[in-house]
Image (cartoon, rainbow, N blue to C red; front, top):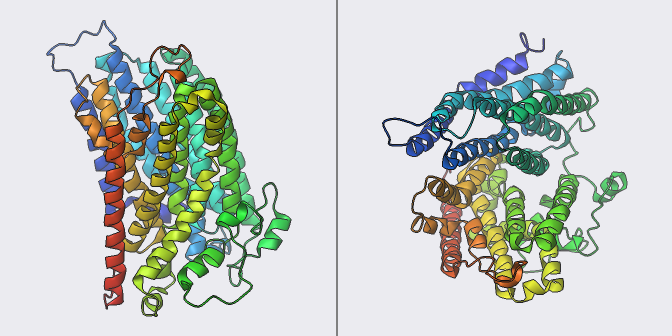
Length: 543
């Protein structure tokens, strides 16, 4: 019933593994990894296996850590919609009414969601084995790496399943899963780098310690999800789509959002008690007062609490202990916005299409421009305020530390880069929402496009630098990446303890190019979204 005759598992496997998308993903993943190895392969006819060049070790570490980060991002995307997808399709109650046990449903959903990802990982093993003749890494390290990768994928999948049982929307489940997984990934990368060169110790830890804790966490998470299916608190979705904020706050544990007090009213204004003023945008008024918070504030409360817990130790280390690494704190803030920002706009247009209200909205007296800026301003407002909660440590450091006073220009540019990121992620999410039919597809397309623009350029430069190539011209690939712009900001000698040399020479030309490219990209996507809405309003039947 759990594995051999589990209809949930069989159905999910058939749906997930027989699609053309799965084969294309597997082929693209293999081609990308093979291309990295092919570029790094030495041109000599014979290899000297008695030496261990550091460049080969750096390449293998980048190869594995890159695969680890990609797998960590993909695991929740497969698992976070396992239960919420049933709720959104209105099939959750029928699934619970079947003779299947809750544990069988959870196991079937989890195994099916992670099977494709495990196939990708196993398929990459022969490629990384080809890196062994390059030197710098032992077979023990490869074995430990893949055991840790498999264990991590299962743990992250269990986190996605558990979050999926608590929420009614896939987007909320996905963003909370990412926020829980993000600190775990950071700790895992630091742990792996700290044991560099100790292949046998890594293997022992990966065989004994890590699986023990991970399996315990997986059992607890899956047991909790199965318990919620056995006694579902959200059964009967009819008439319960909108929650009462006051009743939710009385039952809430931990952070409570007071919509009539500062700073909560910045992103969660109280419900309207009067009629809408003449000339007001009805789309903006409806979205900011009702739509964003119609499913309650659980997701917002978790986002704020988890992000602040992670930000406090980072603040202490990066802003006060080692001030030269202040760019890494800004990087954390940017990553936070990349994960959270798209959630509030990825369903702005596709959600209307799923509820079959898009035609009614576009045939009303509200213009496409009002629809676009009303939805965009609401999503941007919420994501920007949530991101600003993490910027107060940088503002505090700039006010207290003398070393930041002489770098006030770079500090202001850091705030400007974060603002540009908030605008860009919001516009990309609305653009993808206008092109897709489902919110889940829109969210995945948004994350993919963001990674393509923000992470891929700096990754390419890092690979070329490891291979010993000249990256002088390749650095300009990062004009679309805020990460490249942050680390291109100049920091003078006051940032260093010795005070003899600048902490970072920087390149303001790259920073200026980033702002220019961002302005062009945002303008083009806004124009494309407006044209899409306008063409639909003039009689376009399908998008």
